[in-house]
Amino acid sequence: MKLITAIIREVQLDKVREALIEAEIKRITVSRVSGHGQQRIEEMYRGQIIIPDLIPKIKIEIAVNDAFVDITVDAILKSARTGGTEGRVGDGKIFITPLEECIRIRTGERGGTAI
Image 1 (tube, rainbow, N blue to C red):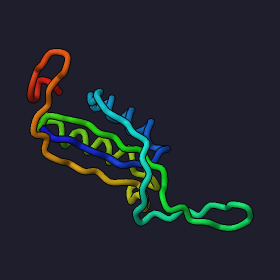
Image 2 (cartoon, one colour; image 1 turned 60 degrees about the vertical axis):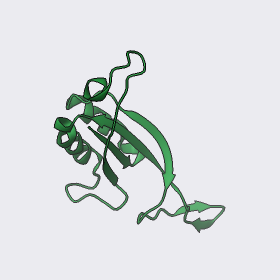
Image 3 (spheres, rainbow, N blue to C red; image 1 turned 45 degrees about the vertical axis):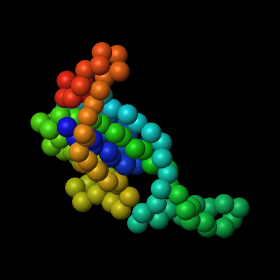
């Protein structure tokens, strides 16, 4: 089992969600987060150009069985990329971490069947 965490642009959420549903990945958790990396956004405030410290992003978390890792990552990669096949700075990141255990609260199921 793996936990896939993707940080993406806010405007790409609908595309990513639709791509995941198309790939038969239907259980996701979505959070609004803020952060910064290489992306620079300039905004105009009271006539002055400012560069915000933290940029709003979307964090998607998906627990999957090992067979679905590549399917999930490919769906996110294809749908979250902006600016053509090359993408642009600020498109986001995907993290894949081992998931030690998953327990469904309602039934007490454990492991891959609980996902």
